[in-house]
Length: 288
Image 1: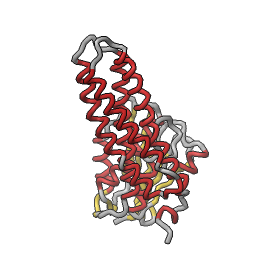
Image 2: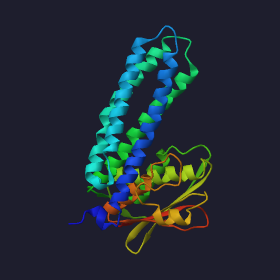
Image 3: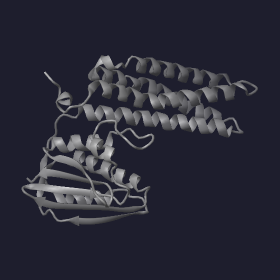
Image 4: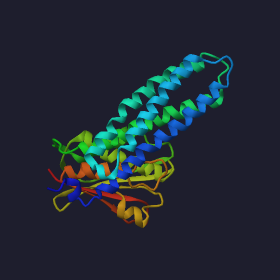
């Protein structure tokens, strides 16, 4: 029997390879920075044996993570590959714990080497990035159902927009005119829409206008979110909701995929629309 992913026309072999690639990126950066710190601290006199031991623990965790990643092969299949990727959590926990102790150790022995401090910060950022990647993958592939309840769509959108941390350079225009209820699981739908709002701000480099509108159309409630950025390229228009597709450096490419999956589970549709005024995403949901 075909899985729901196969029925959606997703290339599972390609997706497995992409997942491995995305998770491997932060692990590689962590490895490079820890190597730099090790050599830098080794050159100091007298040697700090405790720091060396902590770096040894980090190297062991990196080797463990690298071996895990090598075992994620396209022929393994998507579900086993996801399970393997989730095993990286233990390596990340070791890295996180050792890094905290190492930073405390380094800071307690002034003067602090600025280059060492810089690379320790890089390691911390990449550990956080790796956790984010695993969370997004786990969330996307485990999300199978929801428990929606009827709620006023315009009030929901008003609350969402008023609480969203827009950058100072972003202006928000609202036209909330659905005057209807939609069946929704609020936290999940909020996650889907927040992802769109974050994409809008990034596309405009945190300066421009985000327009959010709602209306009722043929028994559906329709939400449109548009930015004033450059808009979708032809490739992005075709692949916007494909897992791991991104046109932005150091981005995972799961945000819009998660948005569509949440909307689909609400029995709705999410579409990327060609527009002269920036990127436009239209979401339609059944009216309650």
